[in-house]
Length: 223
Image (tube, rainbow, N blue to C red; front, side):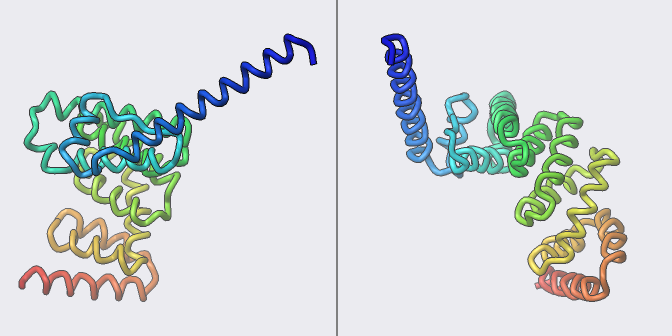
């Protein structure tokens, strides 16, 4: 091996070691962070100090912190400029993650929630659709998607409303999901017509389970 080749190999080796050390250090700061449901974590994200590492775990932790912060009590009592900074940071982080992980359905959902907080109607719709396309059968994400979509139904475009119907059908077909939509059926008059149309097109056993869940939810609401 020539002297030049030897030096090149050594430089690449050192670069790899340095990058590896940096990655480990960055992941360590993620693991040592405050709980995602904390004022400290909210402030860290709002100030632009929160980072995510290379692992899927560290990315999910930041996304979870963003999702919680966007809908938490903190998002209602903090000054408007701070709330906007938090939403902007979360929108940017979610988009940075989807840039390298385009099939990350949860990241698309967080981008949609952040866009909603920023009054970005087009951004919210686009991200909701991408979340449904990349995670059509991930039920826990579907539940969150339906919550965001139904809370902002008047702001949904035609494409997003169609993907929301697919999400509603998925929830209606599952024992866990049907409880979620049955509860909204009781409390949201505008939702009743939409979900009735969706459920009417599903198998008879699914319809019967939905009716039973609605009756149970109604009884519980009276207690």
